Image (cartoon, rainbow, N blue to C red; front, side, top):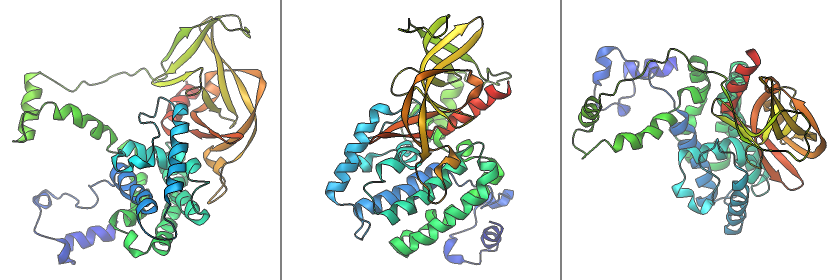
Length: 373
C-alpha cells in the first residue's frame, strides 16, 4: 500500500494520470483515503466475474446448459429455507445479469458452497473455496482480528491460481486489489463495517428527491432544508433488546410459562419454522428452535439438537473453524437453553440426507452482547 502511495504521488507512471487532482491540494491520500469496498470490489467485481466466467467464457471451466439448469433448480429449491435476514432469496442463474450485489454476497458467503459443490469441477470448486473462506473470515466481526493474515494468504493464493486457471486476462485490477483487502480490515475492522451496502440501499430515497438530472446535489440539499431534516444524535441504544411475539399453546409443555413462537433480539428473529429456527451454540452444537418460554422475567429456549456434525469442506482448512458444518440426525429429545449460550443464528440448507449449517455473520455481535451482559 505504501509503495502504491509513493508511485501515485511521484506520478512515475504517467499513463495512469490525466492531470493533477484538486484533491491533492488539500493533502488527500489518493490511495490510503479511498476504501476498497467489498460491494464493488468483491461481490460486483471479482465474484461476479468468476460466475460470469463459468457461464460465458469458453474453457474447461465452462458450465454447460444442463449444469446451469441444475444449479438454478437447486437455488430455487433452497429459496424457501432462506432466513428473513437475507433480503434477496436465491433465484435462477438464468437471471444472472439482473443479480444485485446482495445476491452475489449471499452466494459467495453462504449457499454457493452447497449449490456449486456437485456441479463444478473439483479444482474449480476448491479455487472458489479460497475466495469464499477468505471473505467469510474478513467479514466475520470476531475472527477477522485473529485470522486476517491467513485470509490474506488465501486471497493471494486465489489470485495466483486464477491466472493459472483462467489466464492472465482474468486478473484485472479488482482481482489484484484483493491482495490489499486484509490491510483495509486491519485499519477499519471487518468488511461489513465499511462496505457501501447501506449507502446503495439509500440511493432510492435520494432519487425520489430529484426532479431532474440538473444539479442533483443542490436538489438533495434543498429538499433536506425544506423538510427540516437533521441527523439525529443517538445517545443510547437498546443493545440486546428482546421482544417476544406470537403466543401459542404447545402440544407438549416442557416448561410451565407463557409460550411464544418468535423471539427478536435487536433485529435478529428466531422463530419456529423452516427459515428462522436454527442457531448454533458457543459449543458449536446446532439447535432447532421448538418453543420460547417466558417465566418470571426469564426467557428459556426449547430446542432439538442435531446429533451428528462434521466439516462441510476440508480445503483450504476444516470448515468447522468457521462453525460451518454438515449436520444430521435431529434428536427427538429437547434441550432447555438460555440465550446467552447462543453463538449465532444460522441458515440451515437441505443437502441430500443432511443439512448445511452456515452462521449468519451479522448475528455474531448481537449474541456476543448477550453473553457479556
